[in-house]
Length: 400
Image (cartoon, rainbow, N blue to C red; front, side):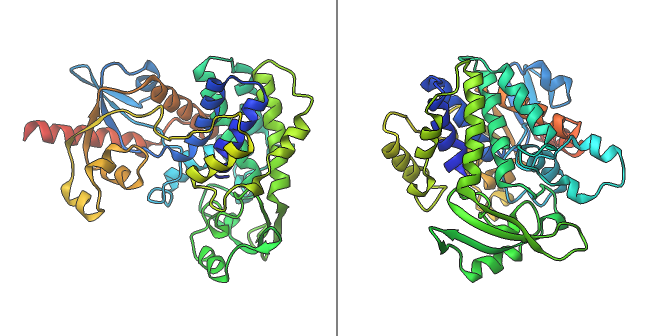
């Protein structure tokens, strides 16, 4: 799903469930942040780093009250998505969650790739997402920011089981798809060129179906394979609005439980007010979405800025100028921890900061714990090697 659901719908549902403005904003913000946080390269942190990261090989003390810290990316970054490691440790845990932990499935051997497919949370076999949801709801406490952050992050993945059902986060035949129809207000929403373009993309996630699985007011028919050697056939046939409303009912119930209040008597009527068709055509246009949702629900405050809780001052110690120039990477992009271009540049740079927020550490800890719940490891060997690579860069810089 897009920000139209992950932030705006979740914020609306949180207020329907009676959460205070600050708590509702926190839950909705971190529901959307899962898509936006892509920081993949280690950097130097001045000052204390929580023990969790050192204990699990995700931070290393380099003396002088400084640490190399390895963040945990959760969002979509086209530069990284072709990597199997990124697919396994970012796309699967947060967007295409497997029915069971990967370790449990793979330990049985002879795994059919169709078993990697994400299942809708209402499916009786979708055990893992429902365990995570139950835990997040039980641990949530009004005013307790870390538990509300965890709740928001869980809602992102929970909602994605509705939009991403039958797709996996890995590159494989299970994601081969073609758009048979994608209608908005009973009219075809995509050109033939767009459909053909999507078919040429690597079969990672729902790339072959474009954004059609995520758009709230589309009715779609996607042809896919049930098994590797079978032909494509209609496998996803749905009205997204109806299907996503079912998701909203479940999220509203969970929010009411987390807030320790009964489900509102009028929640069915309230849910009918969430008419996604009244929103703008571009479901990623935050400014237009804010206007549209504020008009529909004038008593609810909507404001999303992906840097609200993670805005800290990175300083460039050493940057690869050739790389920055070749990708037109500016120092401003390196500072922006949500920039895909900057993320590429940071991998060949030394950056440091003295202003890491508690929210940032909490988010990364919760993200790593999610990766562990799905994969059985906090980070791959390749990810941990990034810390060693940065240490080498630092030594070269210090000896120059």
